[in-house]
Amino acid sequence: MKCILICTHHRGNPNQPSCGARGANAIKQTLLEVVAKDGLPLKVEEIQCLGECELGPNLRFIPGGPVFHHVDLQQVPTIMSTAKAFLNT
Image (cartoon, rainbow, N blue to C red; front, top):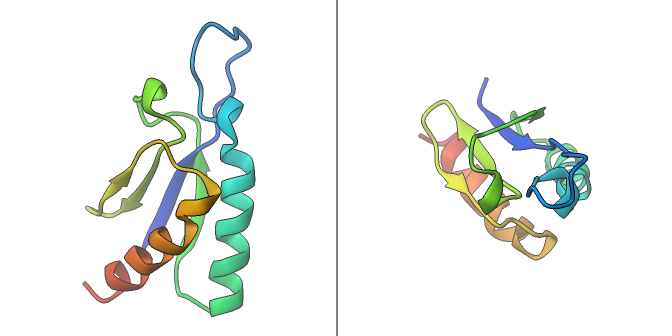
């Protein structure tokens, strides 16, 4: 099954960037709601690191799909358009 991985790692040190500290949990929840509402055969899973904390929040479509950086809630429609196209590949 195809999947969106979203990093939700939250570092305790405010001097180190992290996806969780930048709103990744709210983005994950919104993606879960939209995927369920639209009945898409797509999983949304959290991951603890995609290795690019300074660019977060980060998400990645797997297998072999695009990566999004600096994600915010306003990007959810674009992400979902990408998801629908990704499901057809």
